[in-house]
Image (cartoon, rainbow, N blue to C red; front, side):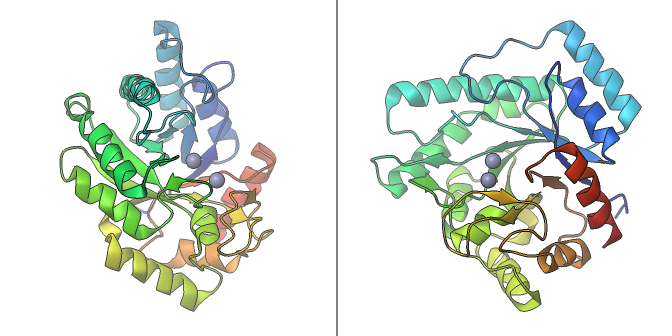
Length: 281
Ligand SMILES: [Zn+2]
Ligand SMILES: [Zn+2]
């Protein structure tokens, strides 16, 4: 296995997607996450040839790898309402196409929300939605990652069991993995604060889902307490999880080489420090 540690942050694509790469380079990132379009709008402008050319120039210049897109917050692949499900599927397809144009490695998406429907129906619908992307995902090596959620509201993906059910529903029809957000799983009730709880949580993940499906981390401390279902990120060591977890994340051979993306508040100045800190572990 190569020893380049893939650590970065969710950098800003304001003024063009290539700027996310340049910002990544400035903060010492070896990988980044970005939004390929406005995350709060249904309709995205297609990427122009000029923007794409600038992207590949910056890609070569920065050497940044294993890049992840974060899908729009509006997308709900498990939506019980037909019209909104349709809009979600359309937006998700467009997102996949943009990821493929930019030759990204991962597309991270929140699994979905059941709203007034049952979790069971929602999971079935998410499975159908993902499988319908198979013809598009046959080309290239883009992998869709389901993000673990804090379990706020009716969101699905709050437990390893729910994520496993979605993976089973999809089977091998599309490339699919898990992105584990440390803040979200802690808020969902999985302890990570010391060596024994960290190992226990990883063992649970392995037992229920399988560690081979764990493809990325969102690395965040949590303002919310264990099991609070509150999704609020804190700087590393500054929240309810504490620094020990992030030490363990970098040291454990099961997690050390998995790409990691910071989504801590405050922006580039903090990320630069946190990336250096994680590397020092
Ligand atoms: Zn997210
Ligand atoms: Zn979050």
